[in-house]
Image: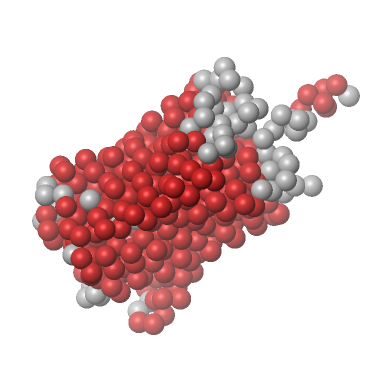
Length: 401
């Protein structure tokens, strides 16, 4: 019947159909790896930065706000990306981010450090809006798997980044980590060679779209996703920003603390690789619901155990707590397919804004009642994300038939 046809999913114009282009997906995942390696320099070096500049934990946590503040422009970058070719943003971002982040050891003041992080944030925003859209296009109908591979690059970066940062400090000192810049330049050259003829906008999008129109289409998915992000941001802020400080404050060496962060992020990389692919099969909501129940429990267990038991629990915590991004990005691309870059920009702006506020809140709690208390409250607040999972549109979670 005619009425049935009007409610059927559109397949002819969707960019999320066709073959899985493994070469391009792996290239973009590799670019994500190199770019985000430098974005991961702040957390492992925070103990040294706090000592050098005599910062409170609230001020230390606020450094990530400067790094994330440019993400508020993500929706506008997305509007542009849905109309023009932003290939050069993807190509140049690894170099710009590498230069800014590798110079943080040279920053003489808190203000100079904040400016460098702001520049890195602008470059990061220019990368993270068009690159996932390109990945979605190259993934065809297997968008969950494509997003898992793309986010695998980002999670591996947060595994390698702390080790590279601490290794560079060990070799050259905090003011010598600028010597890592050539890695970002090399990534940009490879991306230029491989992407010089590839577009970074969707050919099938409606070119007369706007933020209001995209919001109207996306809100049924974006509103509950925002609630999920808020709940899990307390856990991720505590773990990825303050874990090295927690461990060093309790007697661990900088190498052990940074190594623990790397292990956490490596487990998160495996979780990201698993979650998106699994959600293609069993459904988006099912995967998210499982994670929102188990990850807070695992974080509480991590705080309770001591000795050798803490490491396997930390691995399980990373696998669960850092695994949801591919699933949520797949939901956003499925629901915002007429304006994919704008939809991704709205999602990322909301996420970065929430994380920026939450990391300051965790720092304030830590200054007032201690880091362990801040970690405990972060774990308990993680449970509040479960009701929002149930509010997600049902169709976005159903596996392909």
